[in-house]
Length: 308
Image 1 (cartoon, one colour):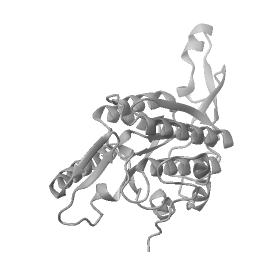
Image 2 (cartoon, helix red, strand yellow):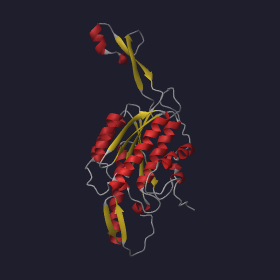
Image 3 (cartoon, helix red, strand yellow):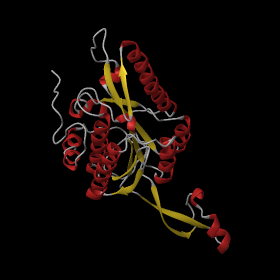
Image 4 (cartoon, helix red, strand yellow):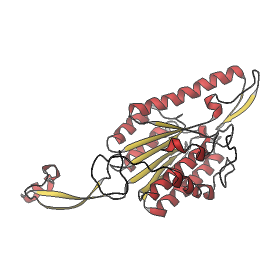
C-alpha cells in the first residue's frame, strides 16, 4: 500500500527550512554506488564519472620528462627558457544543482506540488554531495529571478542551497500571475555554463516544460567538461495515471493558468504534457544523459531507486 502521508514538516505547498534539512535522512538512505573509476585519482569514492578537476599551482622551469602539453608558452616566450605549469588535484569535487522552479511546477493533483517534490529532490542530492565531501553549489531559476551559488564545502554549501530554495519558492508562489520572461531556462543554462568549472557534476531537476534547443547548445558545451544527470519531476494527472470518470469537469490551475477541463480537453492537455516530457528526455539522450523520473504523487522515500 502506498503511503499517502506528507513528508516530515511539509504541507505539500509551501517550503520550510525544517523539511529541507530533514532531507538529510533521505540522503543517508541512498545506496553507495561503487564502480571502477576512469582514472586513478585521490578522492572519497570510486565512480564512472570523470575525475575531479586540476587546479593551477605554479610555474617552474621545464625538466626532462615533463609533459609537453603543460608547457606555459607565454612564460617561455617572455623569458626565453621553457617553463611548465604545475597543478594540484582538487580533492573536493564541485557539485551543482540546476533547479527549475518555473510556474509549471506549481501543480499537484495528489500529494504535493511538483515544485515541492523538486525542492526535496534537489536538497537530497545536495545532502548526498556534502556527505561525500564534495563542494555544493546551485543555480535556481524561475521566470522572474534566479540565484547563483558558487560551490562551497560542508555545512556552508548545503545551508546556502536550503536558504535559496526556500526564498525562491516563496517568491514564486507570490508571483504566479506575473507575465513570465521568455527563454528563462535557456538563460539559466548559459549562466550555468559560466558557473561550472571543468570536472563538475551537474544535476538537473525540472519538469522539462521550458527546455528549448537553446538549452541544448549550452548543455552540450557543459557536457564536454562536466558530468550531467537529469531528473524529470512529474505528477499522476500529467502522466494519465489517475482514474477519472467518463464524464467530468475538473478545475485545474497550472501556474498562473486556470482551466476547466472535460474528457476531451484533458486528453489534449495530457498529450501536450507528454510531448513536453518526451522532448526533454530526447534532449538528454542527445547529450547521452539518462533521465530519471520522480513522481510528485508519492513521497521521495518511496522512490529512492530512481536516485541510484
